[in-house]
Amino acid sequence: MTHNSTDLRPKIALFEPDIPQNTAAIIRTCACLGAKLEIIEPCGFLLSDKRFKRVVMDYMDEKDIKFYKSSVDFFKFKERQRIILMTTKASISYTKFKFEKNDTILFGRESAGVPEGVHKLIKNRLKIPMKNNKRSLNIASSVAIILAESLKQVNLL
Image (cartoon, rainbow, N blue to C red; front, side, top):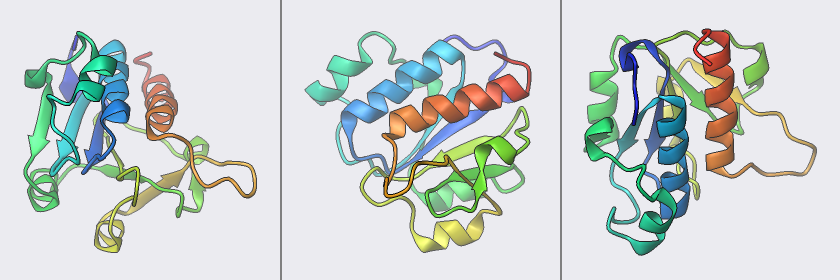
């Protein structure tokens, strides 16, 4: 990934991702837009998975991805940093929110989101508004939408 100053750019965090193709697409998005990617383990796949490798192509550079062994490690490291949770359960639209340069934007598992305990730890919870009766967007699409908006707001895009 190419980064000018990842400390002053939004970070995308994935909570226990379980679909290799989505994670690979998110790695590509982060690489192309210069965002740091953080993965909270365990993952539901191996980085050697052929489905993962097919999508990630040559955008994968493990030194540019921060891995946390658990959500406990993640929240301990982020203790004094602002975390924004993207969730379909939120009442506030991302378009009504003021992003900051050093935000960490957390996305839950594709299959289950984040546990209720994680919801309770995070003050800022946002959603992407959708038409009635639609459950959710693909996580890779959601990351692209939110990352582009946050970069735009902090004048980095």
